[in-house]
Length: 383
Image (cartoon, rainbow, N blue to C red; front, top):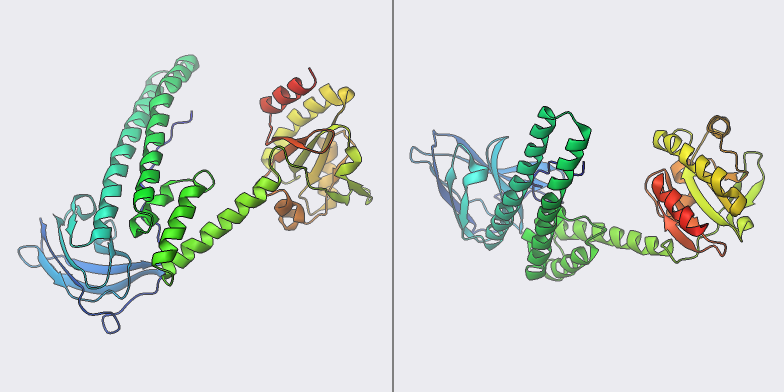
């Protein structure tokens, strides 16, 4: 079942140290009126990498009105809090004159804001996102109710397929909304919050566009510098991934066999080779091994080989796993460095089991082929 209950992501908060009233730029003013107020304390706080820092506080009067004049030193993410579960997040700039209305009993879901353009944009994004997520949640609840009543697996699968299309459509619609929002507001802190709903690898162009826009406008902002560093790392990973993409030459691997003799991937040139990354301590790897064994036994006579690269540390456990899982092919190698092995960066992967399939010339023709996907690919090659 691919449906999942997704919650609204709160703003992506990166670093900036807390401003104080004494050092902040004068002129910032925050006032408002909250209904259902009963003299609660209202706290103005900054959201930073070091935690949430208190800037100022005020007690709501009998009419629920308040006024804070603590300055804001630089643009950033802030929140007004009544309790740990009752708060609203804003993006404040120095010298803004901000007015807020809402319900003191449910501030985060009822507030409106004027006088802070970035906070208004952020409010718009949250409203659109919450509407989309509520629709997804409704589909999820329908499916959960159906499963609690119906026990027939075929009917459950049928319902899953029926709900999957509208659910996926909602996901795609929300992603498009966020991409369009970033295109229109490529130097906005509201976009910095919104983009956290997009997967970095799939939507790297949006990350790069926002990074360019923010960095040009706020080159000294710690929020932007932190985001810039993250985007740069993601960009480097993407470029590294292209080097081991389909159609690329598989990088050479030379490591020792269990007997301590060096063995190179290039020694299998001329054959179709599954370069399989695994480890004896990896449960999912051990569960996948029977599929690799079955593929090897079926196609080894046709020119198929497996080149197993282990991320083990203990040589005895590595050797024992080879025997226990009946990994009968001769090409087993490891440098016994686990995740510190250079092969992890060389082939740009973050988890195991994973693999690449290469042809007789060493060109990558498949990636992450497991179970039926591996069988299908090999069937096409050796038909």
